[in-house]
Image (tube, rainbow over the protein chains, first blue to last red):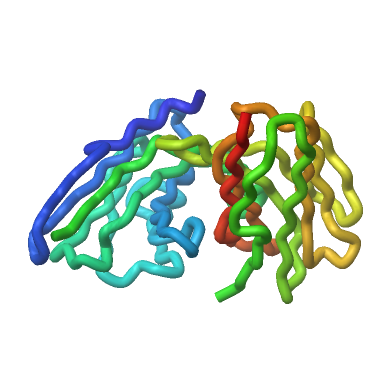
Length: 115
Length: 111
């Protein structure tokens, strides 16, 4: 199994509060991704990173920011959480450019509930 | 954005039955992939297809890359209880860095 750890695994928060989710990998893979999973929508890309301090937006990036100061860590921040951001968030990594092969390794997910 | 239509959305079958699901798009993809998500876990790659017409097997699973490059199929033979989960198709455009995922097919097996 790919060494990917997400934290926290579960979080309940209130509308308007900031939230940070962490993804930590031990594989030294260059590419890291944040997805959200919602019923009826499958997996949708929020942001991705192609190296330290190199990030780009996905299809549902509004309301989210990311940072990658080290190869092994990719942080997803909700500056002011809203109920529409209640979801299960997955981190994924790929050893090559994910766009070349599509082969991603996913973490176990972080379930976020915004009240 | 690009859309993948995956069907059926859910399946309820008896153990031992064969399963078929598919994914279609109005766009052409260069790569098709199938992932499986067990309850409470992240998706895991099952099969990757890189050429139109390609037929690839992984144990009891067989997937095909459609000739038109706009669809893909996944078959599971002789289903067993551990096949339960959500199956996602995913497509990739040449030169893109982002996968497009289908909505998923939830498979439930009655023993």
